Length: 323
Image 1 (cartoon, rainbow, N blue to C red):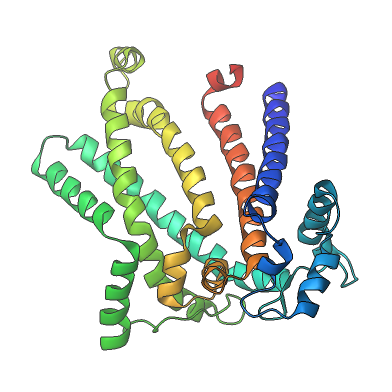
Image 2: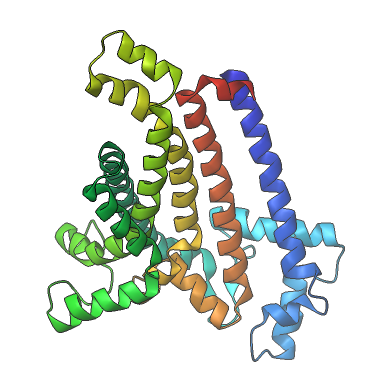
């Protein structure tokens, strides 16, 4: 296990470095022209462009520019000086501070929705597999397909209109911090959680159903039944445990993707003021520093989370450690 962990950590470090280089190339090298002009926003002044060119070292070799970019994104937030701050030149705000302010909403949305889609996705898959071929299975399959087919932005708008604006059952958008008002925090997030989770519930249910139906025909399951184990024990210890291994991988990648920007539409529809909504606003305004920072932070998060998923996968299936 230690050797497997070491290989994965080294691999993650290499991937993170390559991602940072690729991000630098995409933002500053490939488009051509003056990167200071692109970073200055829609209506820059000559003085601002020259200041950006000096601050970011755009008049120096590319390796120096890369080091300055990484220093501003990853070192600047932990230093007391303002020389290395990552600033939005459109709004004159500190990008890292804006991301920190939006993180609680994004993480709250992602964790809550993740629990919902994982729990109900597993329930849907198990029930469908146990009732395979029956009316219950067909009904659940239909519901799963409906959930998968509904766009998040459409479902969010409909749910917000009918349940928040028309009937005032839930608050009409916005975010309340957990520590300041736990009940308000829960009340404001119930609708976003459900809307974001619907798509994943149907997909996870279908994947798990297929895995269970394939696993029940394996030799080790038949052997367990031949030994006299009851059906519940066989389902829990043999069928379900092995069927859940792909679900662990899916959940890790999907959860990382949601935090890394997959919740942008949900945050925007419900005005949660999270990191995804901040990134969407920056893209609309062609504000380059926030786009670059969000891309780097959450790409790094996806890589790290994928490594954690690999370790969990190896724990569940020791054969993976040999790869």
